[in-house]
Image (cartoon, rainbow, N blue to C red):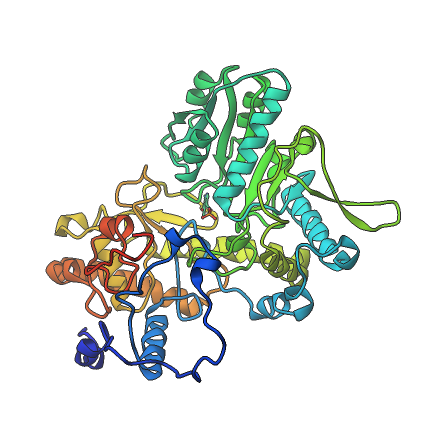
Length: 500
Ligand SMILES: *Cc1c(COP(=O)(O)O)cnc(C)c1O
């Protein structure tokens, strides 16, 4: 595969296109008196001039951004098997409903007498999610999964303090998503890691040893990040409860459980969901998302405020909540449009449809597991749930790594799977096909993965040099994350530009 010729040819004309005097439009001369900026803002915040500002024609700016948008890989353009992220197709009808003017034109400061419909939608979505998860009450306020975790852990902390207990440890399995230890630490807890056993599940005897009356909670993920169901979940919850601890469940990935089993029935006390994974909001660009938190009865008084409530006449109102509440965690009631999409999604599928989502998601993951198994090593080879985790053990004899395999997939038009996570699998390739792919697409993906394994044996140097068919090749990913170049003319810099 070669680099697309046309793009290469145009390359010199595509960047640093600014030329002095070019503009995308022209406005009539100002016929109003000029405003002295010193009158409307503090003078130390006013800059003398705008340096290094790109000057381009309309034609160039349209091409620039249209071209950049085409460089994005999206679920709307192809298969996106990014494990733990549930990059499934999001039905467009949900977008249409979220954009209805009656929703988009309401203002959060409008009196509740004018927003009864919106409050009803939020209230009903809370009920749906409580029913799906088997929990007592839900808040829709957190803006992301990690924000939901923080909200949940703050409630756990408030619960223990309310009982006069200053517990200081949170147990986190070694397969956990990185946000779990981060959240616990942010809440002032000491994280104690629980190892996984040879089956990829929580080591019960290690947990038994670690569990004490200093432990505030365990943060558990089920199915875990290997895509495996924690079969001893009830015993785990019982053990933690016995010592007065609580069980937090990271429910970011609910795609395997919908309509099949409920965390609330497994002994979970608090759980967050990611509406932008399981409940049909596109994600990957940094938002907007939504990370509702569901709790059991004993944690209800600690829910963030305001709480949506209903009076005797059936009218909705915003209750100030219990005095033990953790307070406000969001400016208003959460990302409303994301809630509208989840509400539409759940209503359009219904209970039977939701169950089918999970059945097909699990079927597809197991199909990938079975068909790729002879070609790629699978460290924990048992029935999986929504995703399966391989590694590069069989390709290492050719010095071809997980990163090389992922880069080579780009040449074939696929978004790579999640790589090098979970950390407990060396060289992990974490594949989540989701329920929205056709059998033909999954077969094509499997065939491509097998092709790459053949290439690894026959021409390892080529695989190590991939991708060939991408606008950029191998980036310094650490530098790209730590020192991103987000500004025009970054190198030249400008002393007058704020925020440098
Ligand atoms: C995605 C994910 C999170 C974090 O969700 P954000 O919305 O990205 O903050 C937490 N835990 C697990 C298991 C996840 O997959």
